[in-house]
Length: 202
Image (cartoon, rainbow, N blue to C red; front, side):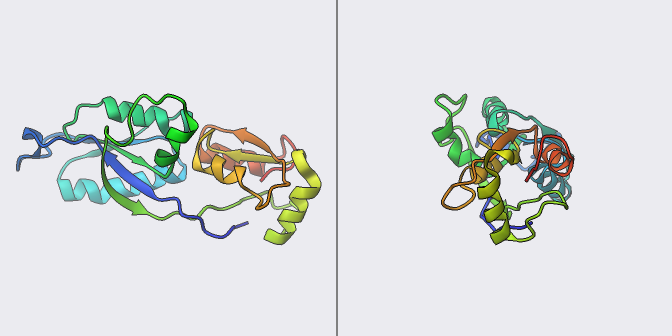
């Protein structure tokens, strides 16, 4: 079941320098593209699709690494601590902008520790449920959520992830009271929602 598209911009972020690494010989070794979420999820899919033309254009291998945890802040911290030589990039979504409001202390400064390179893609947010869910469209789903209350499980990619934040404001006007289930990435969430365990799931 698809909701109205919501902007979830994916930005490629890099630790860069203006030193010798940016001579005409760059790059001279493989580049690492760090993904903050589980393999098979939307951010990972975009990263792997991006790595192919990126490698072709740069003439070097682009290695995709998944570093999950804490709504993407673990991966961001790893990249912030990486050598500022242009060989470590982070691909993230708008969770990069919301993290300072969600965490008392971050292992990085999102404004000064990164050089923001480019927006890659706009991603619509969708709702997916089991085929036997009684609701077949958005108005029916809103009615169903209000009637079921906390009997509904809403799977998301983790506390602070965009899917979690969207779930916090859904349905519009409140009244759903669904139980949030943080799972290790979007792909594991897909299986849990479709499965029978844990009651009705969205």
